[in-house]
Image 1 (cartoon, helix red, strand yellow):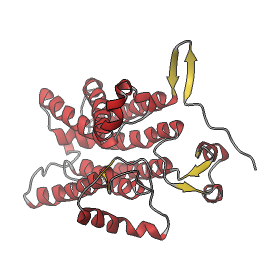
Image 2 (tube, helix red, strand yellow):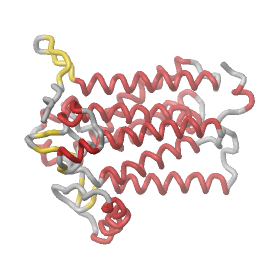
Image 3 (tube, helix red, strand yellow):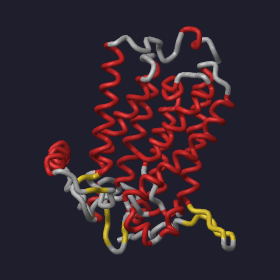
Amino acid sequence: MNLAQAINPVAVSLGPIQVHWYGIIMGTAALLGLWIAMREGRRHGLEDELFLDMMIWVIPAAIVGARLYYVLFEWDYYLQNPGDIIAVWKGGLAIHGGLIGAVISGVFFVKRKGMPFLKLADIVAPSIILGQAIGRWGNFMNQEAHGGEVSRTFLENLHLPNWLIGQMQIQGAYYHPTFLYESLWNIVGFLLLLGLRRLNPRRGEIFFSYLMWYSMGRFFIEGLRTDSLTFEGPSWLASLINGLWSPMKLLFEPGVMASGNIRVAQLMSIGLVVAGLALIIVRRSRGKDRDPYLSKEEKVVG
């Protein structure tokens, strides 16, 4: 049996300075997302500088939000290891925390620029989900965010390349490549959002659709993971979440939770799906934001 060695998470070492694959991949995701957003922004008559300025606001806020969110739910560990709080290269960036940070900073940014938040959110939504798809490969390099234990035969039956299977071998056992499942789900979501643009929906609906699509996939994939952020909640809520996830049991066993009975990401995902759908329905029923994603005037731009 041809076994591949695990990939070194350090891409380049320059004396005491180490450049991690995690950072390279995250940086690549951000730059590609920026390029796509700028191209789409031109169709709306927006200057590239707007998106460059936005990056200065949003990226740091997203990183801080993602790290704080993770640290708060793992406070017992970081209380004993405070030096690791800033060690983002080791992983530990919660996407929901990053989304919260990005949205808060984005709201302040658009107020300074005097433009509607949902207009900009619609433009950048495909960039966000594509960035998430790419960013999951940073987890792959760190051998984190994986699911429960599986056999090598299971991974081979997925027709995965040997180098990927080898990276999913951790301390002698193989694990669900949940990073891959989520990455593929997000790529499909990216393509769907691009298609939704062509239908020229009402303002805000591309962003709300992003929230719903990403959250649906995250809810089911999260149930396979063994490193979820968790808490001890009411039994009725845990039963509800388990019931919603139960169709997955026809294919896979759920990942074991180290503690708690509710996965934070699953609860957040349910909330975002409900919120996204409710916002679309309520705003349409009240006739809010009748402006389409791309107006006739904007269609002639670029």
